[in-house]
Amino acid sequence: MGELNVSQSMQQHVKQARDASLAMANIDTSQKNKILHDLAETLRENSDEILVENAKDMTIANKMLERGELTYSACKRVMLNQVKIDQMAQNCESVAALPDPAGKTVKATRLDNGLDLHCVSCPIGVIMVIFESRPDVVVQISALALKSGNAVILKGGKEAQNSNRVLAGLIRKTLAKSDSVPENAIILVETRDEVTELVKIGSGIDLIIPRGSNELVRHIQENARAPVLGHGDGICHVYLHEDADKEKSLDVALDAKLDYPAVCNALETLLVHHKYPDSWLANILLKMQDSGVELRVCPETKKRLESYPDLNLSAAADIDWETEYVDLILSIKTVKSAEEAVEHISQFGSKHTEAIVTENSDLAEWFMNTVDAAGVFWNASTRFADGFRYGLGAEVVVSTGKTHARGPVGLEGLVIYKYKLYGNGHVAGSYGKGKKDFIHQDIKL
Image (cartoon, rainbow, N blue to C red; front, side, top):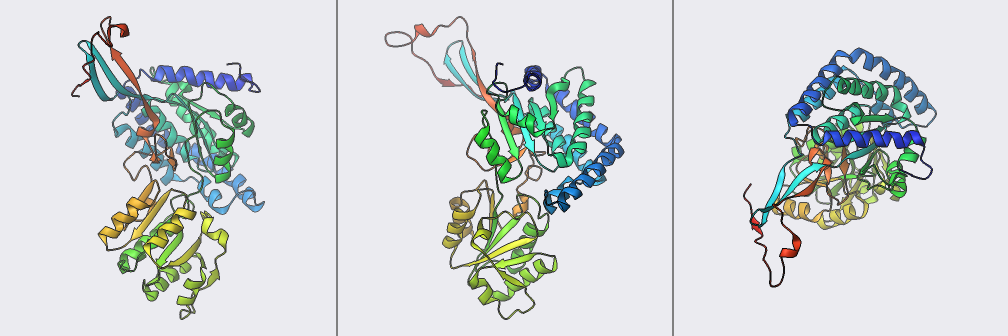
């Protein structure tokens, strides 16, 4: 490859993945699905080994937490248990049940008699995914990569290296038993130096997907030579309009914050219309507080809740509106209108997921059309922003950009397309002024 400052071993990894991706391009759907079912069985059969390795990581993660090198939420994401292993296995089976995204004819056009052009979906090729904390990501991404026909190079965080290693090892052992899918379709690298080298490679890697802290994503975006797909912060808002239903407000707000606070689709800022009933807001915040949530409020919110002494409200600083807590902290701001709520979201949101709670359908549609985010919900928790919940089987990342894929990226986001032209000795010089004309006729699929 001749890449500067890239070791032979890293270049070899990329070559192995590239060779595997070329083989993957011609594997049929039934072979892919068999591998995924075999992998699900392998995970269940080796759950004890997985948990032993994960226990080692939890020891490391807890020490990192004590030293301030890891947040509580990141430490929590390292942990695996039998339920999560079962979920990983089910993810493989769910992905197997989905239609194969590769090899589908998207559009077909007859350019001339005997000259047909087909636009066909195909794998991207070699994808590098860099992630932190969650070892179950190894299986999620591998399943999606295998089904879409891509080879993947994985790099996880050192806090989960034993879990990542055993999971990647089990996947590669499953592939090694296959006559069709090459073992190097899944490659795990483990050190930061390896990532530093790999992002320098200008050929061989087709797409880099970082999922983790804003710092990680920004670093990759600034240094990578291959295209980057991903998101930084997940600063998600729920806006409670003045005509919102009491129970819907309560359920949506609590679920968005408390269902899993340590993830990117959790609620970080609650926006509340100034005419929304104070007693309803107080009830929501008391339940948040009882669940361990620290409440940081704007001056107007503090003033309107003065008659509720049981609420422990601290003053929100400017930095709070632009902070992804992924923790039991919530900022609350009172707004005068839906327009002000949208302005706040436009200024401080991360284009991840936003929600409105209202009984006004026209307002809801206006909000969903106006807010610029990968997901905009009406009377539903932001926690629904998830590949599995969207029916994608699993997700490789949530993309907040505006490239070929946005929102939870599942199988459809891991394919691109190519044009296949079927001719019969046709030459371009036969067409033009005074020559033959193109038909440009749609072919029904």
